[in-house]
Length: 373
Ligand SMILES: *Cc1c(COP(=O)(O)O)cnc(C)c1O
Image 1 (spheres, rainbow, N blue to C red):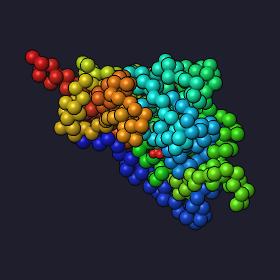
Image 2: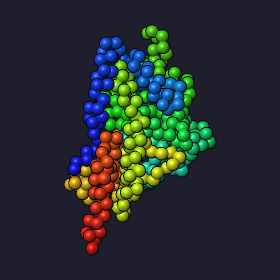
Image 3: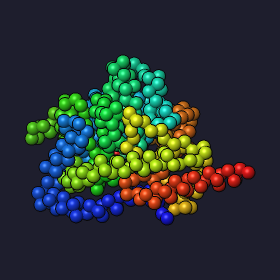
Image 4: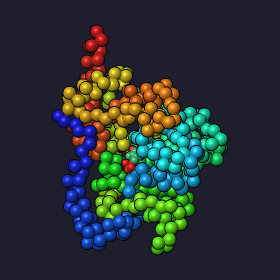
């Protein structure tokens, strides 16, 4: 049996008629940039989150940049964030010539550790940027308390956490503003580049809506330096089709994760911990294993693809070398980079494929202990 790491083709084949119809309607309407379909998608997505409105943009990276702008982050400001994430989490900070100040992660949830974040606060700190990594909401009560105590802005990178809730409230609406990505491999994947900005503060939403469209509020009058971060009409239409299935797809991810959590038994392998108050939407199912290479090869030899997100933490990336970090600065993040294995988890996975992944992991235990004898 083969278990690829992703299989969105299957969903796209199943939805092909609906997707093509949405494209045809967009073509006929001639609304290629923003327009009715983008408006409708924004409203539908905001509605699912319990937000009044949302701002569709051309990528998650753009949405994050708008978060930094709307929080008023300026050159030299410090923004505390996690080194264990996709690099785009920190790009917006760099775009504003602000300083990403990394703090170490929790070794179990892989999210930014609130205690480490608090220890990194200085008089120059203006914001905390949390990432709900792999779909697991970060401990927002702690971060909201920190933001209040030190008068900081709180930004949420929700690129991997569509529909995730923390104590019943949608991620993206817990801090000051949040960013979603619809990169094709995300839990809600567009058929191209797309993202979304959301905020519970209406003035921030208003400013983001302006900034994404050249800051042009009146025709050919620019209130400030703007951007072209607009969502395309085709993407709004296609995302609108796929959004209807997102809840079902998320439930399917959760069912697979439930099976993995209950049935994987491999000595030395650290499973994620289910958090009933903040259930993950399982963008990734990430385990830790000290002999990562051997495990990955074993799975690969048996036709099972895995991921390794992320192999190098941000503080050790050439892009951030000017920060002057060394190996050992954030030991938890570095250790997780060396040990993390992402197992296949996606709504298109069959029950047999899930069985097969579990069997192969549990069989590795015997191999491992035989090798030791
Ligand atoms: C995908 C992703 C982004 C960037 O989104 P794009 O749409 O690719 O620009 C940012 N942060 C995280 C954590 C991501 O996974």
